[in-house]
Amino acid sequence: MQDKKVLVVDDQYGIRVLLKEVFSKDGFCVYQAENGQVALEMIQKIHPDLILLDMKMPGMDGIEFLRRLQGVQPMPKVIMMTAYGELDMVQEATKLGALAHLTKPFDIVELRSEVLKQLVS
Image (cartoon, rainbow, N blue to C red; front, top):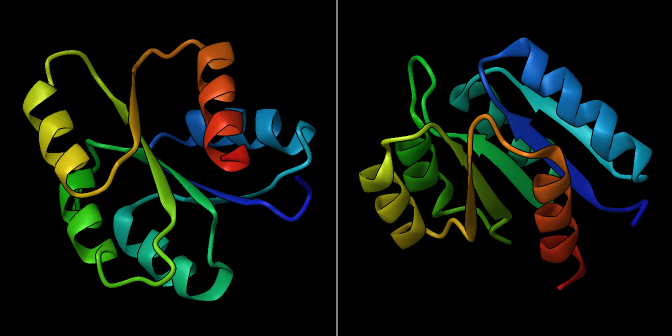
């Protein structure tokens, strides 16, 4: 698993730091982006295996990010992190390739389990 790269895209600094700490302990290379634009630039350089994507961010939301991600090859796996009441966004994101979604505040054990599942398969 040491060669697996995870990109955390979230405008909340505390969430990025928490997820970096959790997944670094699992041996993943963890990168952070505070918004969609920074994440798109990073993807070209690091080619992540998995993206943990916040749906609500200033500037570019998760849906727009997923639309722009469509041309990236190979397409990284994406797990969405959403707030309650964003079911329309979840449906749209699933159509655009997101594999799973977790509702904030998420259970870190559940998130870790989903990440491991996606990176092993």
